[in-house]
Image (cartoon, rainbow, N blue to C red; front, side, top):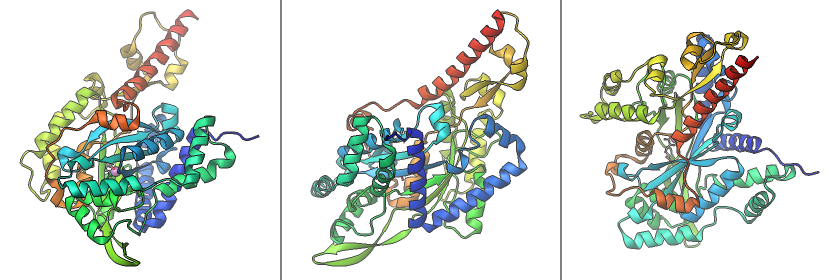
Length: 458
Ligand code: OOG
Ligand code: NI
């Protein structure tokens, strides 16, 4: 008997494997994990209410395993291959992110699980960017990078065979799982040998550092793996205390009572030794790509909430001082317009909520006919639990890219994003994240409607 491994456990194996691999490759990542474990334990000990609300949201158990990674591929064919692999792992492309306007010649999507049960089991996500060579000015260099990329194979023959098996059979057999995961991990490992000579590397690097990062190596190395922390200000302070070269400030919204979206910080990219082919010999050089990031996740916002978020952020950014001077104060001021209590966020439909029966609700006597959500909430029968944001923020992503690429790249490209092109490469449309949150909210309401209607007939 050769049974299939569930998609959720395959993804769990993949996430754990990536974490082990990255810990070995970038020891400072292990330090970040220590910081995060310490901060999370302290927060949970001091704030039993938060501990309980994480448990209510079904996120207490997943917290220690929760990560996102980021990779960058060079061609549509490579993106299509990753999409096939991630589908076997239960990860689907959600959202379109255009980073060209922020001076990064890529567009991106995030592969992640989409339904509630899968998110609960293992919410592993990978922010995946496709290089847009058409944005590189020098035609000769563009052609050369294209040729290098078309000539490389990022998956082994064995890995491809296992993938095809999984697709044909509708799953990965238990006996194949360890090898399949090992082959997938190998795609994302670091290569300390470049596949182009140092002159070519330098020209790619001069066109844009990202061209060198993608096209000068054998494969799409994972460039960071981000754990989830419950108090990012504490984590940032601890990074600085330990002398880690952290970003000047935290990306995203300011610290609030009720956390929204995503706040992130990172340590700057490491300078790593690379050997470049030089005839029959090798030549030493360096490359910076890999860094460490920590994030705190808050609640998902509706389109209205997102518009208000963007407006607040825009206000904060207007007239920003170059070195991030008084960044936090400016951000706090700009976000005064953004309600900071759950009831207002819910009543103004700024955020998404999952509605769940409380203990009191479970024990409630049959209801009078015609009651609705406001009655259930007022009676304490139903509780509104904010839905955690599972996605990314283009402005933060651009800030993260930039702080790791150096300031030379802050000039934006004069280009519109090209969602259709990314979707053509994926062979499918990207999923709208708002629809996913909306579905979770609606399903919870439908469940309650059924429950209370059933009470009526008894
Ligand atoms: C991806 C940057 C985006 C985030 O957390 O916003 C990202 C990259 O550097 O390849 O990971
Ligand atoms: Ni990231």
